[in-house]
Each structure stands twice: as structure tokens, then as C-alpha cells.
Image (cartoon, rainbow over all chains, first blue to last red; front, side, top):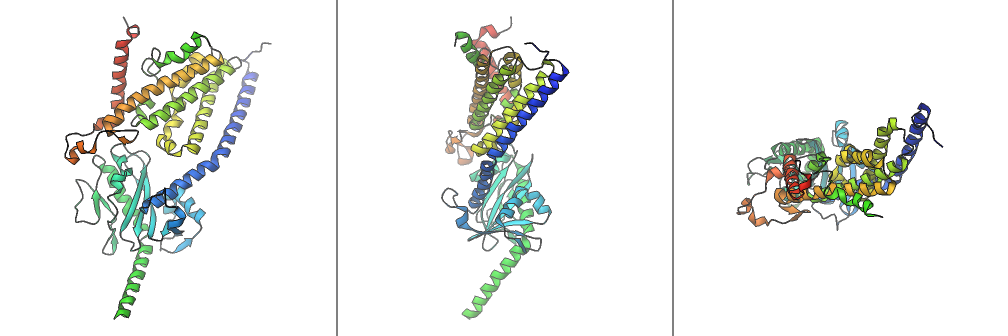
Length: 240
Length: 209
């Protein structure tokens, strides 16, 4: 049996059959592995949120520290408390921010704010946790897609991220965030940490990202701070 | 399994190495060798793809219309790469994140298509499979050598563990600092050059008269 493998009919049938087989194979693989992949992605987000709070994700479960996940609008009002919706908003944070939908995680010890910004070569993102005073940084997690290894990519190292806890983001009534200071931070300034040596552009990106993203949540923070001051004032009155 | 089959496996490790003798797959050798772990996973992924694309193309070799054989090769290779990518994402998520786009770029690795075109289309499935494994290993071994030097001299670590003591660094009052150039692709190219130099000095038959 010998057919002409170069006839047009044979080539067309061959291609069609090949494409159908490949399509079926890939669809089966994609559908079969999708639940595992999505679980991985969701798990990674939860791990990072717990890490941002300064807890060890290996021992502390997400559910035990986060009391609720919400989406806020531009005025700081809660528009959704659906957990699935909040995580869906995280998948495209840039679009969510643009649509004035701001996901926020409320923990027993503070809040966790997702971050999204631009590094030198591509997007950078992460989570920053603030204490119940909405001012003191409890911790930060930073990640990137393509910063230079050893330079800009150092933002992901524990060494860099350990500098943030204890810093404050409010200066008076304005949110200034945390600045990554080239040449080393002024130790007396509560809004500064050391920039990455050789990663100035990435450091500037992180600075801008923190202040931009926190400012989206300003109405919510202001309200929470006002409420806290009122409670304090009331307790002072009672004491008197 | 005669000695001829075995030669398909061992040849690409040294005398016919895809990276340092045929000078193929240089691009990804520069991109994923900053650290050892991604280099090893990349080497293994390429090995799986070369082995199975060789096997599949060798099985199909008598039925493939020669006029569209390059397209067929691409479809087979791309399918395998997507499968590898999906499996990595599902089972070793961390590593797959680290390798990011480079897994997808295995499709464009010249070694894969080069072996299919040059070997699998003329040889039996078993020989082709071994040739694929051999070439994947040959590629991976060079990646590991490059990554060893780049991670050690560039970051002072191996597999993420600190090898050069923290106290040696200038910041801690020592005398040492990492070679920042090691973290950039040009240095990988220079290391490849050094490996080729050493390799050719030991293998006189590779030298042109």
C-alpha cells in the first residue's frame, strides 16, 4: 500500500485530523488540571495575605486571621461582602481599581490592602497590612513579574520586606505611604525605608504603588480613624 | 539495545552537545540560569519535550506529508510544551511561576525542532526517543554548569542556601561583594564561551585544522 502523501486531499485530511486530535487532547488536559491550578492560585493569594499580616502561613490559617473580605467603592462604603467576588477582583486588580472597586481584607488585628503598580520592566504587586489604627504598617509582601534578579527583584526578599513593619503611612491627615529612599533611609523618619541598591526604578515604583493604592482606601481609613478617636474621646469623658 | 542506540544517548552529552558544540538553544541558556533550581527544571522540561516530540514524530514519520512536515512538527512540539506548562502549573506552582514565560518559549528552542528534523524523521522511535533524552540532558547539564557559577558568584548562594558567609560582605564589615555582572545575561554568554573553550581544548577532534 503506497499513497501519495503529498496530494492535496491527503494533506487537508491529515491536517484536519491532527488539529482535532490536538484540540481534544489539550482541552481534556486544561479542564482536568484547572481545579488544581485554581486551587494553587487561590492558596497563593491567601498565603500572601497571611504573610503580609506578619504571621507564618505554615502555621496560621487564612480563615483564623481574616474575619471578612469586602469590596469598597470610592467613598469607602462596602458594596460587596462576597468572598468569591473579592478574590475575583484580585485577579485583575488594575481593572478593579479603574472601576473603583477596591478589595479589602479585614483581619482581627488590622486590614490587608492589595497593591498593584509598575516596576521597571513590568507590573509589580503585593499586599500591605495596616494595624487597627489604619496607620502603622504590620507587614508587606511584594512580588513582580520581570524585575532584574539581584537588583529590582530584591523587593521580594524577606530582608527587604522586614524593614516595613512599624513604619507609618499617615502624615497629618494625608497618606504619604512608605518611601524607599535612595542612599538609605533617615532612621528618624517613620515613612522611609532603604531603597534597593541598583534598583532605583523598581524602588520608585514600589513607593508610588504604596501611596497610590493606599489613597484609594483613604475614605475608609479616615472613617475608621475618626470612629477610633470618638471611642477614645468617649472613654476619656467617662474617665473624667 | 546495541551500542549504536546507546551512542544516541551519550553523544549529545559531550562530543555532540547541542549547546556548546552545535551552539543551539543559547537564548534560554542565558535567560533561566541566574539560579540553579529553575535551570534544573528548565533542563528537565526540555528533556521531556525533546524526547517525546522525537518519539511522536518518529512514529509519524512515514505518514507525514513532507510539504507540511514543519507545521506538523510545530503542532506536536507546541502541544507537548503546553502540556508540560499545564502540569507544572498544577503540581509545582512555585517553580512554574519562577520560569514564567520561558516554559512556553521551549517551543522556539532550536534544539527541539533541530533534533526532530535532523534525527527523528529518519530514525526508528526508540533511537529517536534516546536521542531526545540525550539532547535534553546535554542541554540541561550546560544550564546547570552556567547556573552554578552565576548563582554562586552573583548571589553567594546555591539552591537558595547561603554559601558565602554573610560576614564576608562589605556591608557587614567584610571584604567581599557579589559580582553584579553575573546576574545579567551577557555574563552567561561569557561563561558559555569559557565552557566551549575548555571543552575544545580537551576534545582535539572538535578543533578545525
